[in-house]
Image 1 (cartoon, one colour):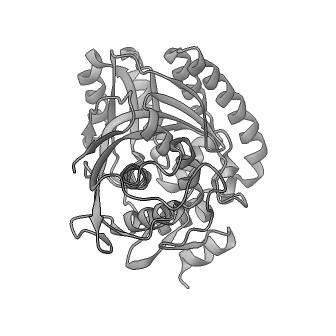
Image 2 (tube, one colour; image 1 turned 120 degrees about the vertical axis):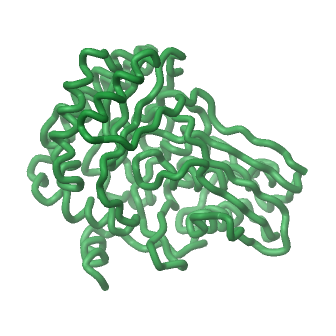
Length: 367
């Protein structure tokens, strides 16, 4: 047992045996499923995670397997695909770069559908970024499950998939091909894969959604920090970043619930300026920003300097996506160059300008 294992055991984070369906659905599906197509390809958008409701929920897994921390996310056209066809066994292709995640998603979806036949699966993120807040891991889960479900004639109700995947979620451990590590998931990436836009998810249910106005785009900058595997990241989050703010968690959760409610109302009213104002308030709150700084030393002051530098260009929102370190700015497309210049002035030169995603998954029947 290494240092990471000890911390994760203390906080009750467990390894997930690949293919083990720990939390099956009790309704919203039919068995046994039978193929209705020979080959299906699904692509899903990514998500940029902007806001939590309940900070402590990040390290407290519910008995149902979920992490009920709430989520506000923006759809982004960083896409992920899964190509699934009939085969004699369940086989993930060698070209699939993150095979452990894909194999687990395939196994649990096949089991839930009651399908015992074989499948050939190729699935990949169509972008090279990993663990920078773009939802790449959960998007692989979502695309794989959607493609298998579609090939089998949708035996699992589509609106049941986000909670099902959140309950059984995990990410890869470098060097371990038999297990994943439990990682927080509230179903937001899967809901984004279904709907697109700006979404508010709580307890794995989609509560509010709005379309991102067409004049807005993103600038994403990734500061140069080392990126651990999922087990290392979870150990840092559970062990390192929470230790010096445990006494502040009740106050933090009260604050974040209020902001979460404000942003939820803004989404309900299609008010993207109100959404941005709530996010600004959250990322001005020092105890919250300290969480990021404990994981990525110096990022708090870097973020605030960047945000101040960009104010004259009137961005709608700036936030650290998910656990970071990627910093996202939502801005008018006409100001993207000026916003990028601000990032570069502070030494952040790994920059992306992907389009927003206002629609969910696309599927193609190949055979």
